[in-house]
Amino acid sequence: MARGIAFESDKDAFGNWILLIRKNRGKLTLREIEELLLYEGGGKYQGQYAIFINASESACGGSGWDDGSEPKGDVAELYELHAGEGCPVCGKLLPDKDYCPHCGGSLHE
Image (cartoon, rainbow, N blue to C red; front, side):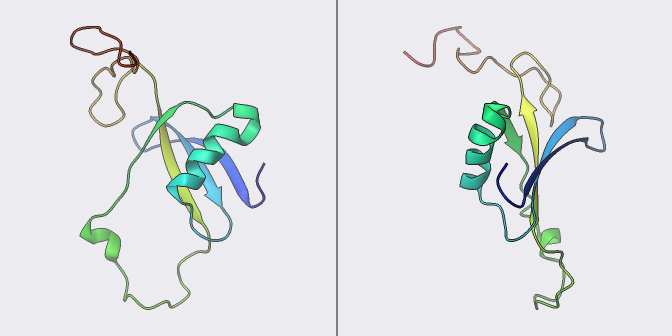
């Protein structure tokens, strides 16, 4: 396990399973999250995930000055996606990632 990184399983407010990646110091980047999912735990976390990014005005709270009240580190909440299961946002079935949901043709040929 990378130093200062922890993986945890949890549930969101609606009971959906989420994977939390915590970093003790600094911020997580999307590239770092991707590499952690691919290689940590011998590939245990490989799969397809969705991450929600709050870029709304409400995320801009605070005075804008670094007053030291923000906790150190970062956390990413990821929803694992599986074909044929419900979307964590709308609940509709997710299509198979390898085939077109309309005609059934391969997306890789």
